[in-house]
Amino acid sequence: MFSRHDWDGSPQRDQVYGPRFTARSTLLRRMLGRVRPRSVLDIGCGSGTITRHVADYSGHVHAIDVSPKAIEVAQENLAGSRKVTFESIDVFGCSEEARSHLAEKHDVIVLSEVLEHLDDDETALRIVRSLLPPGGYLVLTVPGDPHQWSIDDDLSGHKRRYTKPELILKLTRAGFRVERITNWGFPFTRLLVSVERRLMASQQGQNALPMMLRTLLRPISLLFRLNGIIEPLFSFVDAGIGYVVLAKASESTRHSAEKPRPASRVA
Figure (cartoon, rainbow, N blue to C red):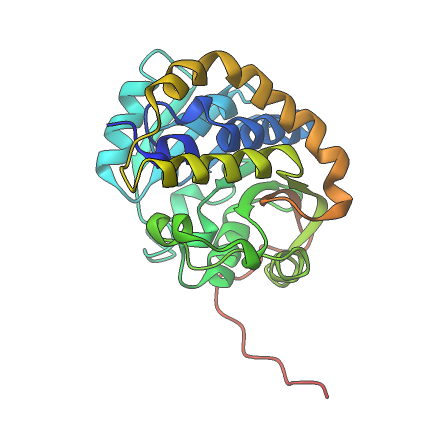
């Protein structure tokens, strides 16, 4: 079944041709191209669609996911790659000792469309910081603009959508310096998402896109890729549907993953 989330960007077989996934992954590749990592830890790799892109820019990728089934699917999808190793681990739910073998082994961590699913995103970011060496990089993608909350967020299990100030603040508290934050999806991808929702409504709630659109999705994905190149030019408008962030781990000693005490409120 070709579900709405095949286009939206969840780990389904046709997602790589959808407008959101294509535009976002094009921008993510550009961020990776800036740092040219030797080794990447891909947290929440899912079916491996983003991992495939990450492997193009790294000598080695260690892909992890809390779901053993996701790891199984990712291994099948990337069976021909010698760059990628896999592990099923709940990196945000396990003890520090259980994840210690991951600490400071990779110069870049990729966290793509994961943070918005977590109950405690700030603790998760501190854990990510604890796994990076000083000067290492985090490449992060999240959905943006809480006002765009829709049934898609509910179906995807999102806990939140982010604003730019919120994202920068949380990253800074976790021990990162934001070097680049790009708002993507305006104006073209956001328009395409609107068209998608109208098409879905015309299907009277059926969880399928029209067959003609499914046939055209792959060839027109090249146009979607252009969105990832053009839309960053409109990032200053901050009216897109998500953020891609490049953040650098502080040069101080390894940041603690422990939750800090609440700061006093300043009037």
